[in-house]
Image (tube, rainbow, N blue to C red; front, side):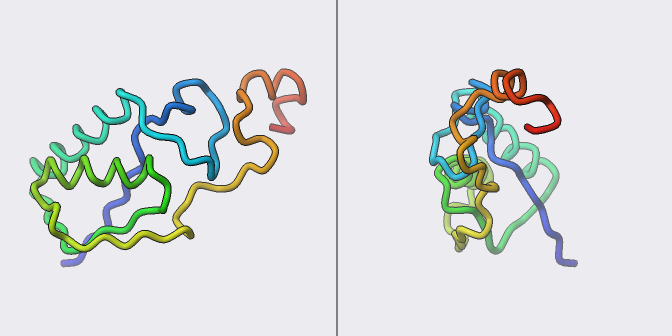
Length: 110
């Protein structure tokens, strides 16, 4: 039976700082790396086996996938990178602190 498994990238450096990230290509934080490794261990322990992986072109997603694949010892499977899997683009909000922006413009606007 075919299964689709969706995994969000681990915490990024801007997630840690509570910033809008969007298409800005920030890396994983240390916690994000640990989250990705844990996801790989959980998937392996759950008996999941993969033939193919998809990721966005953003390094936080690619590195999350690498850590998962490494933990599962499946670094050999094909990986398809596609910009259409990128996070949504936040425009002028990218890089801004979410709490500060909400305080300035109102929670409903943000």
